[in-house]
Image 1 (cartoon, rainbow, N blue to C red):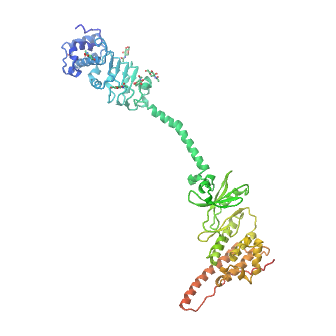
Image 2: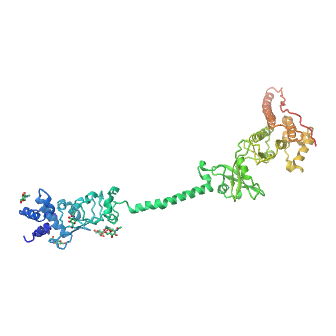
Image 3: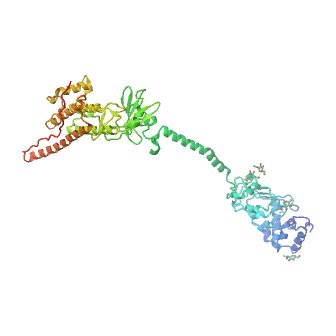
Length: 541
Ligand SMILES: *[C@@H]1O[C@H](CO)[C@@H](O)[C@H](O)[C@H]1NC(C)=O
Ligand SMILES: *[C@@H]1O[C@H](CO)[C@@H](O)[C@H](O)[C@H]1NC(C)=O
Ligand SMILES: *[C@@H]1O[C@H](CO)[C@@H](O)[C@H](O)[C@H]1NC(C)=O
Ligand SMILES: *[C@@H]1O[C@H](CO)[C@@H](O)[C@H](O)[C@H]1NC(C)=O
Ligand SMILES: *[C@@H]1O[C@H](CO)[C@@H](O)[C@H](O)[C@H]1NC(C)=O
Ligand SMILES: *[C@@H]1O[C@H](CO)[C@@H](O)[C@H](O)[C@H]1NC(C)=O
């Protein structure tokens, strides 16, 4: 056979020439009709003698049928790959864009086992391969280029199987679905540049990586900045949105007060004077508060005072919640007192019984005692208009002043005036030209003979007259600073509480009496007089 050239490395093709008739049929058919020529053994033995590097030469024992089969496949594949002259050369396998036949050729593992040495390029790209990496291909260790891009290959790439392919310079595994390979395979990835693995799944996705990097490098700082801004905004504008532990106690910001008063709306404005606006507001936690906003430069020590006042804690003192100290806004925030002031209660309520008045006085003295003992530097404005009554008629002193130097006797004097006001039910400031002095003068004038004239009509009844009369005596004593006969707060409290107790006893006796009268109609019990103290001095004016 002329075509069997001993020098030709492309041994297989020499057979394909002799089998040209069969090749017109499909490769499968050719394989089925395979009939190994009887002199095939001697042919390849000759070839091996000539070129021992041929693959089948080293395979022992030689499987002649298999070797022959591979020559048939080779001749078909060479033609499929449009190699110009398959009889002379078979330099490349080109099956790109051939999804119908590529899997078939890949399945001929005997072909790959004897992969012709002439093949330098294998192109299997875009052939819809959806399997693991076709590892048989790597038996063509002499190849210089391998393209498997644009397939659906998955699983691991057998990276270690690439090491015998020392002449492979161009590899393309792009656009597949391989599993991401480990860092330990770094050498492999250095050998080929990254454009060999675009979207192959092998390398960590650049895009994903970039997104992560962007998130880390840009997003994170932005997140931190936002958090800091947000926290700053909260701290400096709306600390009431912070958890309680992070808030600075008693500190209110203008934004908080604005929110509490619905933007300082007219509806919430409850009072206005030259220097102070008074708003009612509701804090975020639902507490109703009174917000006193100070305008101008007066009251320079406002905040220092507040820092002391927030520490006051007694049931008979209005609790100061905090303050706002800002260039634009200076304000004090106190609890909003539902209910009315003592002044309103006395003037407008029809139900102001003597025992209630006593109870209120007791509360006032308790508050005063607390301040005297714990906070002697705190002064207060003891007027019926600045004492608030809670819903159960517990009095609360408001309007405090720090550094009040007025002595105890002055405070006692103020209490005396308050006491008298509650008995006489006339207002010293409004009803008398000379104010308190006139008010006291007026009472002293009628004491003790004509008290009926000055006493609140509601108290001038049989049951309470005596006690009320003695209470007026107590009030006059308290207001009498020069006589040096003032009592201590403790004594005053004792006197008032005793009167209150006897009032209660009296009330229950009266109930019994009513009951008894209904039953038998005899005994009446005299009210007991427990309201005893030193006779008040005569007016010394
Ligand atoms: C091929 O021929 C050699 C001798 O040339 C012989 O040793 C070998 O067994 C033969 N192989 C087969 C598969 O017939
Ligand atoms: C090679 O393929 C072409 C079609 O591309 C076909 O016409 C021809 O017969 C084939 N030759 C052989 C030897 O199979
Ligand atoms: C892949 O092959 C199809 C035809 O089978 C073709 O339409 C497509 O353009 C090819 N894609 C690439 C990237 O070569
Ligand atoms: C690579 O090419 C050289 C020279 O062409 C050759 O000697 C060597 O055998 C080839 N390597 C492999 C693994 O085929
Ligand atoms: C990768 O190799 C190709 C040629 O194979 C070249 O065109 C490209 O510039 C190389 N890219 C890099 C990043 O080295
Ligand atoms: C691999 O194939 C892709 C898509 O066809 C191409 O963009 C890339 O440049 C190729 N890489 C190499 C190394 O040829």
